[in-house]
Amino acid sequence: MSKKIVKPFIATKDPMVRDILHRMSDRSDEGLTKYKVNMEMANKPFSKWIDDVQEEAWDMIVYLEKVRQVLKKAKII
Image 1: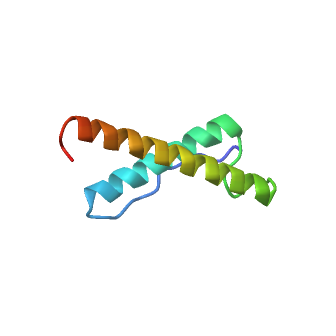
Image 2: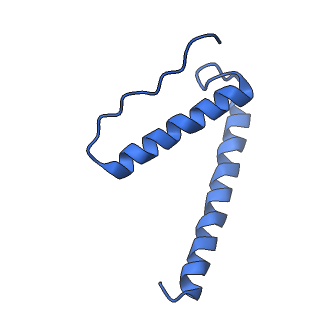
C-alpha cells in the first residue's frame, strides 16, 4: 500500500458534519495503519461482519445508557 493518503476535500457549511467527516477520515487512517487494508479490501465471512456490527451496537447502547445516567444524576434530564 504505497499510495499517499490524502485527506478528502470536505465541502459542507455545517461545522458538526465537517467535524464528523474529519473524524471518520482520521479513524480510517488509523485502521489502515493498524490492519494494512481498507474496507474495500477487507474480506471476511458475512457472519463475521454481522457479529462485528452487533458488538458495535451493544457497545453503543451501553455508552448511551451511561450518558443517560450521568445526565439524570446531574438533573439535566
